[in-house]
View 1 (cartoon, rainbow, N blue to C red):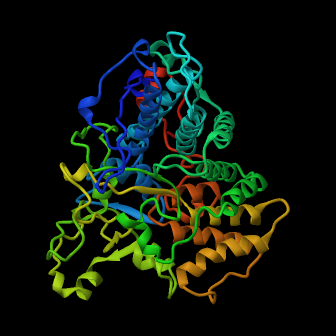
View 2 (tube, rainbow, N blue to C red):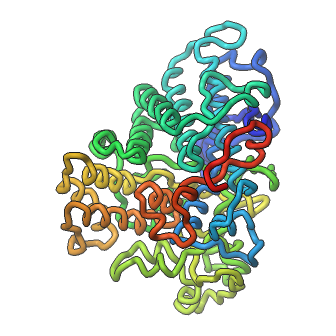
View 3 (cartoon, rainbow, N blue to C red):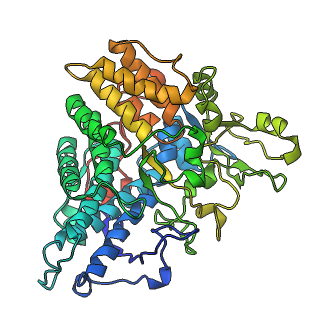
Length: 503
């Protein structure tokens, strides 16, 4: 592997307390410095600060969300022209190759996170000087570290399949060049081991919202089991989260995606973003702490009165008419998920809305869930939105559990229906739209519901692949090739990694 990808930046983040405008991930970049193993991990504060830095690469994975919909039937890239955000256009058109900047960024960010987690794992017992630093809560802190490492590897294995696997320590340049891809089964086994360790160590609730909890680790492990078709294990693990009564479906679906809805009662795990960071990196994956993907979804040239709530953007990641048509009458999720700008303009004449039509792959629709809103960014606007990604919601847990019960060797369709219909009753506001199907028909109903509930949140492509539906749903999808993305060409060149089939 290229040392530029896996070297440890050791970005030291200063923990801040909650205020009206800051999140715990905020930090002052003037405090950043490069350090060595001999200089660091000498105190409890060092361990806690370095753990926060292991969260930072989660923020740099923001392009996984648009990729998960653009590669599916939920969205198209849109934009100004066929060359606008070329890497996403190629993914949309299934012409992507191993030279793709978006895929390279997603690879690099994940391995940066792994290396940071491994650095902490390497010195869990004693630091590089042989000193043991014990403190109350150290085991729980390492629960976060192992949750994060599992999260990064799960991102990699579902994006790329077999990937380099290392866990003992951060890698030197010479070591990284000799590392080869591990079988997907081995990567999954490590993910399961890390999440099991995390579950044992993590508390059920964190004082600082956004930090990993026991239930977040259980939900992620349930998802990992589901991806491996370990349905009975998935059902049992997800049942822990449901029976905890720690989460609930909020009545107003749209409120989930407002700033006031972040880290709410439905949030199992969210990637935290901040608009307080004044530094940026246009050319790299480590752009800062703001959510760059939000700017992408905004309407190009949007303008209007002061009362008009939305901010302009780049008109990419556009919902398809196919997605809009999938919602049936009475489903309140459609208006929250898909914004028809012409209908919005006509319904709100006092806003004096003007905008530029997206000239390429225009659908007339925009991603309402993550539409940029006024007051949610600062500094360099395009890179600095504070919108969290709702990575694991309770509705997702319910639907995963429904699928796991339905697809188990000994199915429990009654329980699967119950969990599915909890989601549908929130969507329609009544029980008249409940599903009574069983067997394969219930399976398909659950899959359809995942699309409607989680649209534009980055799940669709991966759901289609893992359930074997991709080839029949997605034009251009080639079985035996497009289930995974290509290994970045730099990694093939520098480290001699084998390439995925067809690339």
